[in-house]
Length: 95
Image 1 (cartoon, one colour):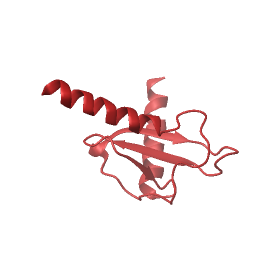
Image 2 (image 1 turned 30 degrees about the horizontal axis):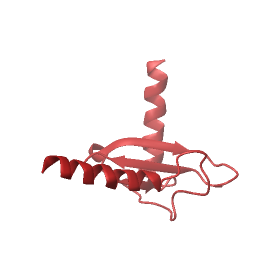
Image 3 (image 1 turned 90 degrees about the vertical axis):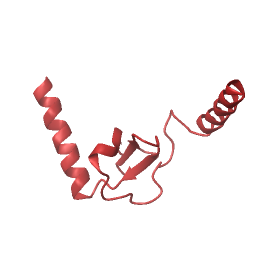
């Protein structure tokens, strides 16, 4: 029974990963402006993508801890600006 569940899970993950384009990034990944706030304790990882020729805007993609879901964070929101500022400050202090 466990092996059947494992195989089903592996198949679902393969289908999900196969549909995601990892590199090179084409087009914008965020379809709308994104959310203005995500509780910091729910954030597992943040990826910041600078504007490119294929996507003219900065994108901030947040991966949530519990679900692994990815959400777009509005780079113009006060929360995003403060979060980026704090991350840059922490990085400078580590160097």
